[in-house]
Image 1 (tube, rainbow over the protein chains, first blue to last red):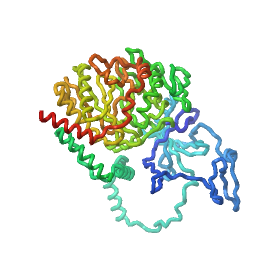
Image 2: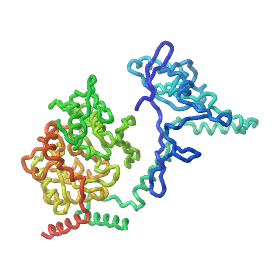
Image 3: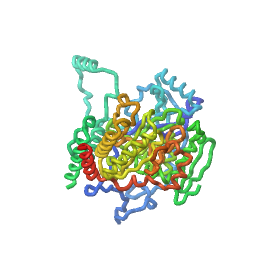
Image 4: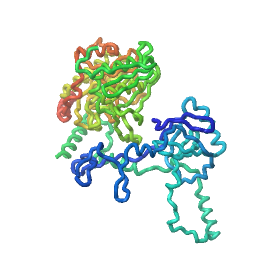
Length: 258
Length: 326
């Protein structure tokens, strides 16, 4: 694993030097777009909408449409607007984890202590576990302000990026059954049902089977649709059988080619 | 070292225990350069790296395009090495990788493909003393470039017996009409290669190898065995391994060092050299470059024109007919 960020956790007067790693990876397949006819790869061209001609990167700028006119932004404009770069994840508050709605959760990252940070890292980890709290921190990642909580997960401190409030939509436009009264007997029945089905959460039970299925199909396709020849039982076959078998395998190939 | 037409020698700079090689385009760092890999010979990790850099022009043609099974000995040859197939995500960009589906585990494996000298050094830095390429390339993973018969003696066999088996394999293959080439395994055995030129599937190649091995076994019943089960295999016989001809199987490449006492190299031989008295221990890290400079790459044809299975079968059939009627 390669760290994607290096810095320190700021926790009171203590600085814990850490490296940050992605805690997740995608389980999707990389598929390429191809021309149906000759399987050449499809490539993107950036073209001028009016002339239809390709525009080189050096001639491309970014703009924002304001009152039907484009305001063009340059590198220094972006720089001016971006957050000041710091290398500290400063913990400002500690809160109960259940107070943070799962709506806010974004990507998780692992934090690994540098050699010098091992002791305070462990201390923070144990203290978080003991208090059952998580740390809240605003910090700068890739020039952007980011919000995160730091929480213990077994023996590692996980930094979970969380969304800002303005990124969450208000659900008041949904038609929700706020006025309907629930009957006590019905509720009791539903609760009983839930209790019956209650178990320990076990993530290993759930697999992303789509990718696996797709891959299997890809490999089957690649091998051709021919009926799978029964596995060769080499143990008992004599030289002659083997010769016949090999000859047959050559004939199959010729038939297929013609 | 004078190397004509060779890869330009990299610039080197030493930082502490590490050495940085600057090739034309990329830098590769070798850590713990002075670590002892072969204690008896005092051969270091750095010596291994230097060997492969000096041999790069000869060995790379046999590695290019082939997924590598990494046999890592990061603590030298006195500790047992381990195999690794999946490459780390953080490999530098010059290290090419090939995603291959493993049917046995139903997982995607990202193999390193050693396409350039930088990758070779990178692998060495990972503790790869031995280099283990696939027998097929990414162009056609299911169609091997060569057939291999691995002649693997027991402790009780002499190298002269190995030579006897090798020469019998050669005789049968010649009668079949297939040209074949041999190299020392770098350990106690020999490898015989028959060019196959991506024409046949692994199964076809394996079956043909099995056929040849059976015929050799008929000739040398008292010293050879085809029993793959180690428990059942006689401790006094030479095992002829044709099962190496399978997708994903690997053996030490030609010109590969072996993590064995003596810092031996898997060295190609002319058939004229395969005579009683030959010792595989004479080919080592110390003299391989000199030998290959003098003799050229005598293994080249292995990647050349392949055998014709149909013709070979015809030839062998008439041969076995004769043997049977005798």
